[in-house]
Image 1 (tube, rainbow, N blue to C red):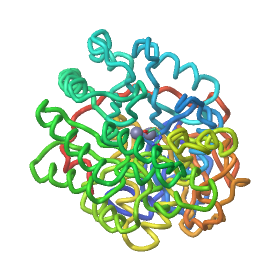
Image 2: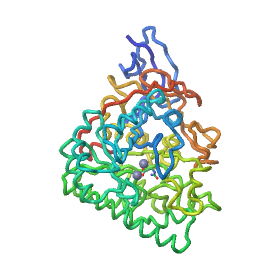
Image 3: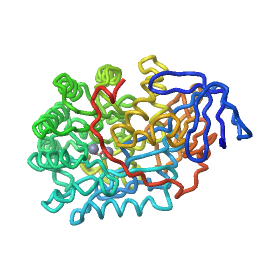
Image 4: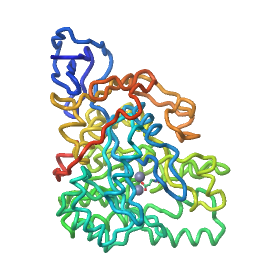
Length: 468
Ligand code: URP
Ligand code: ZN
Ligand code: ZN
């Protein structure tokens, strides 16, 4: 039996781009081939479009407290934005309550998503208090369907900050438990010192956010995290890699054969430290960590993607309104909540800056948005590929669509977009989630609450298997 055939398009996988139809029965793909028999199924003509696996974003923060405020997007608006950009699955960070357990964090985040999410989702746990009890709890996470924890070397002075001895112990425990550690690699001690010096000088503007988090601060912590992972014989995922110096450390680790995975994000390609220095307080709209960098880093980062040293392209969507939220730091850049909205623009930004310029092949596009995300985040087989048996999550991609980005045409709940006034090329014309039409022509059709929780399990992929 076949319910639906997407006919006449070009199927793009991480291996090849081929003229083929996709046949769907219920929630699954059942066949891919040229001129498939339709047997009375609904036939949707997608000629001229590229058919890709639903994109996976392994790095979002929905309905999360940070810097004394809550993200502007909850699971309704945040997943609507992600879906409008072609994302059919996110893996979001459930934040441990300082006094709470990891299981409680997962339960709380499942409650936040319940009845609101438009797309499927998994959960990481972000550690805020690595007590002995919490260390003992880590091995039970896979039973909850959680295969990843995030540890922060930055944000000293907040509960997120984790000292080296605890990071090391967490890596040892995670290795035994089959859990992957994600690391935010910036030297929190050095940042705190540089921030103190800047504020004492009266340097309070947003651009000092970047100047107190120089590239070496990220490179040093990246190397330290990698070395601690090597000492613990544990794999590691370095998230939001922003600069050439940090990438160099990852490249060196790969030359040693270490199982280090790495993510980069569109904001490090679309924006720069010049945006942090925008007039007035506008730079606050571009405050994220690690910070936006000098554009000279970009060539290295593109090479990192091409060579397979950077495996995934995540959004790090962490949205705060300008009014009332970014404004908390008007007189002190350290009080600006860190993070940018970007789930909606993630794929189009890569198409515009990567594929259209010839730096990224269609195959690499699918690898870093879907296939490698699925492998690293424990979703392979179900998500991240167009293949018989996989969930029928399909992006019908219009390679020539142009979007004039402005806050009013965004699907999220933020009062600005950092992409304001930019033209992006390439966008989903429509999106299917588990066989159901979820998005078409700018309209989110999947109802709030239709997304499902995905149990994930991490299997250590060889670094070479996770790259193209
Ligand atoms: O600035 C950022 N990246 N905010 C989100 C929290 C994090 O560190 O990922
Ligand atoms: Zn982080
Ligand atoms: Zn993040």
